[in-house]
Length: 207
Image (cartoon, rainbow, N blue to C red):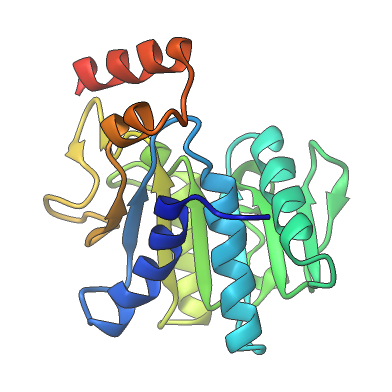
């Protein structure tokens, strides 16, 4: 499975963010239909191949996204030890090297899951900026287990309607953007269709 140029750049940029000591919680911004699942899967694949003892977890809010990200990783690396923890999917696995989970199912299960080195959040603009919501509770619990936990956010819209940009302001979970691909690039390169172009342009108009 061949990555598009920007997808390959995004994967590389995540670890460059850490190597450059820019922070521990980067964002990857990819427009709708830009292939976030492939970026997530390729990033995990490369890291597992280079650092075999590293443990990953991806959390999100929709079972369709859980299944999509899980299947994409297996398409890239079918021998990887990957599991799912999601009541909606009917699986509650906890011991795999790579775990895909629904936040509704795991928000109180940090101890059952144990140490994770990198926590990836798909659709991370849904994480509240502050308070005691499920995402923040789970992240705090996982940091109690591993204070060096890295949190990597993926979104097409790196802002909240209430709260602004995800990496700015007091108590921001994320500390910067590791990589961002402009909607214009996907349009010019023909990666998104006309109806997706209209959707992307509407998203930009709302920012």
